[in-house]
Amino acid sequence: MARQSRIIDRAMTRLKLKQLRLLDAVTRYGSIQGAARELHISQPAATKMIRDLELDFEVKLFERTNRGVIPTECGDTLIRHGKLILAQVSNVAQELDDLTEGSIGRVVVGTLLAATPDLLPSAIEVLMRERPKVAIKIIEGTNSVLTPALMSGELDMIVGRLPTYRLAAGLVQEQLFEEKILAVTGKHNPLARRRKLSFEQLRDHGWILPPPETALRSQIDQYFNSQDSYAPPAVLESVAYLTNRALLSKGNLIGLFPEHVFASDILHGDLAALDWEVPFGKGPVGITHRGLDFLSPAASAFVHALRRVTSNTRDTIDGDAAKLRSIAR
Image (cartoon, rainbow, N blue to C red; front, side, top):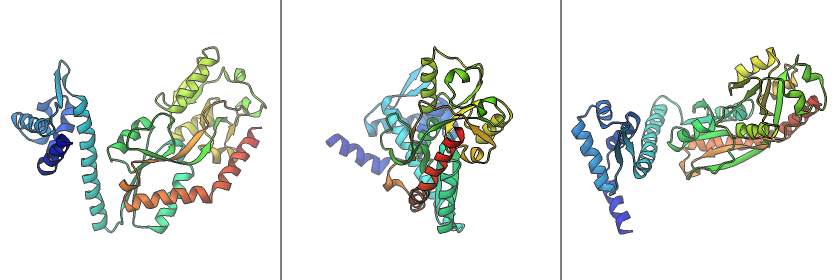
């Protein structure tokens, strides 16, 4: 405890934001020289700043290797927390700017494909109706891209399918609802008119699949391997809604997606849900954030909007899902 108290005292009285910016730059450049150039300081000054940090925290932060300067485990920890501090400072500046410009708060939301068609737009509509001056920014991606951004403070939350793997320390999840995976294709695909399909009848078709780093793709690959190491004749990896929609409607590709992604297209007859019971992929959709204490008032209001939208539309969600399954049959 004495060492911890000593380090906390030094950090509170001597730590500078420029030192944290330097650590981040060294990691990106892999060299102190490149980082010093970005911060417009001399290399000796940069070296001294790192040395001061090592003395204050009583750890070694970087190792010199043939590949350049790389952070130690302690260095990684300080850099990770440093990026969060820098992001919070940036968020404060952005919120103050929003207030000056007449906006009341700001929310930055990372979204996965499952959240895009209905849940997120409905919650945004609620928030904008109740807080019309809130600034909202939406960033689409996969968990592998969005989670580091959430941990570093660049995002307030992620909305979409909750990952099944162990969550990083400091992150919390809130489940909103569960959904299944559907096999989707174009309405002119001959398979769209067949009933009680088996996987054998799908083997000759190309597939639109999520990227390898997603949990759903891992489940798909495991299933394909269990089917005599099935290798699709063609694979497109994409989570781009408009691209996937166009490819499905024009060809005979099969896509595996959460059931609400193309719900509207299927209900309107633009695409078709195959009558094949996907034997994997059922999972929760919800919110991931760094804890309620880290949410700004605007971000907290958006979480409440997501909860209310889910509660108010639960019957609609279940009804649409039932319709989709009846159409597939």
